Image (tube, rainbow, N blue to C red; front, side, top):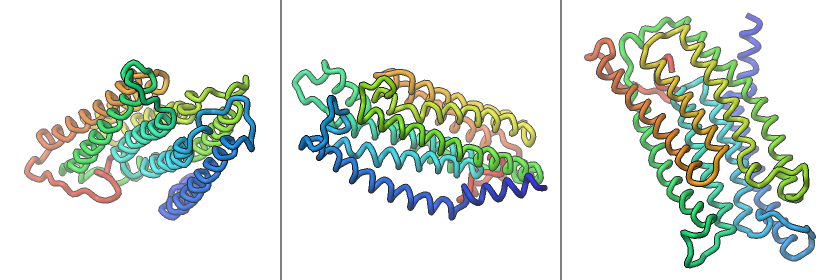
Length: 317
């Protein structure tokens, strides 16, 4: 009972609706302030008021200043991912896809600040990567639309509707424990990433600084690794309340999708883009097959219905 009360108290402090609204306001204020500060730093560097031996590309063009507030917005999106974890697995997975898409858009802002407009567009490595990212962003945006479309078509069966309430409550509490544990992990990784980011911007050649490429990925490399571990725990705990084949395959498929997203941070160029698209397409296909499985093979076909709530897809999601 004590642990249950402690879990609920921590959850309400960190992941309640009120906490979400407060976090949203704070992140918005920080994002605006960081954008202004970044613009000021770029101006000071360009007018030689601040002298740097070899300034980072983030301090050369005002367009690059968009990169900074976008990074804070991404951190808030990660918080939302954790926020939706206890409510719905499919929304939680869709948030992963939205985050990776926002990372691509952030990369586009960075690439725009150093774009080299020449007639040899397709022979320039940076310009070619910008083209790949541009196409990838469009494809991902459409794939996420399809994912949400099919997520809202998940059907409930009579069997699902009559699941043991106690088992459902226990599984939801497990989700809350995992989500609550992810919040301090998010904070620690964010602070570590910010420190490395600052070192990379002001002293890009220092031996302790991380390269710009690593700064672009470091937070998400580590956080997606933690997400994979959390996903495996969720899959294992889900066996306590359901052994439906399609549910197990769906949750396992989502883990594979997350792993592919994690691997994408360790590669460059078009391989990175292809891995990201493959991960989202795989998750989408898993969702579509799961929906058809529920619709065609679920118990009580005549009683299937679409009764989606704002909180999630179904009692065991």
